[in-house]
Image 1 (cartoon, rainbow over the protein chains, first blue to last red):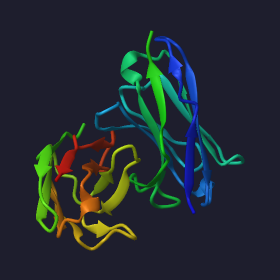
Image 2 (cartoon, chains in turn blue, cyan):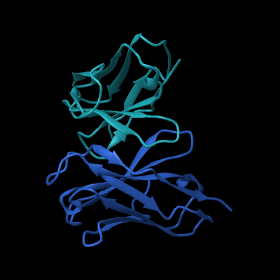
Image 3 (cartoon, one colour):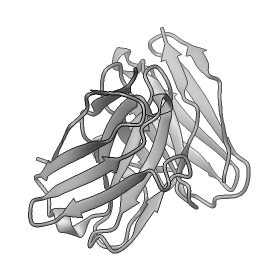
Image 4 (cartoon, rainbow over the protein chains, first blue to last red):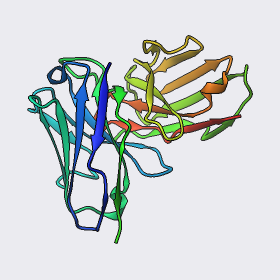
Length: 122
Length: 106
């Protein structure tokens, strides 16, 4: 059974930093492109970032480019999101998600974690 | 950036009804469109990809159609568990974008 479990969401002050983690199991992690998608409370979905199966390719939404860094450790079946210079508008549930297709990415998501809440507030 | 207009934002229906949700793109995306369902307090779930291919395990009352700029999600014979928020997502080009969502309520 595929499982994605995010952690690391807390309350942080504006300008602060945070690292989110996503522990994956139930599939061959290093075969798949992985993603972060966020959702502000009561709002819609926003794609944040992706990382290829080998970590060699990353993409970011313009809203987080230069501020967030996605990474992965295939030996630990883990995905990460380093978040710096946090702003109040970064407050959201952050979901990690798995690509539907192994190898070459499909860019849509067949499994999602339960989400972790990041609150940026003074 | 490909902009997506999803409509309606709110849809009221009854069990047994047939409903349609529309997703219109600012430019053609071939069939690179997915649909998701999200229930309160839960993560989204993939329903349809490639505009019309049903994800494994999704009931056949869900169907998708369209290509280019206009897409539709249809639910035939609404069940109580279908009342949720639905999102379309384009994956034709970066950035990946989602529609604003359609809340389907009783």
